[in-house]
Length: 46
Image (cartoon, rainbow, N blue to C red; front, side, top):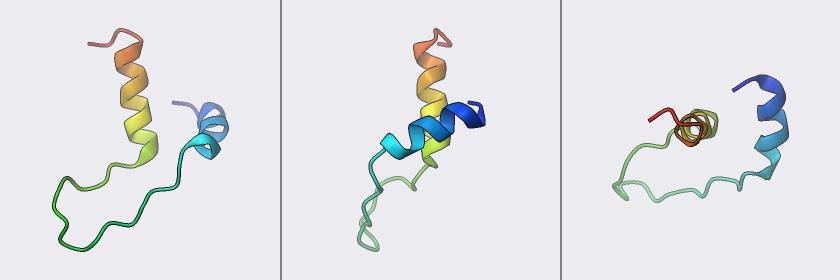
């Protein structure tokens, strides 16, 4: 994802909530990386 698109989309994303220590689950993935993956799949990447 190029910087221009990210600059337009980033303000639209909700701020991440703080999780309690030891709450389990997966480690956070950076929002930009997650959105890039979602767009890849939506464009027919899989």
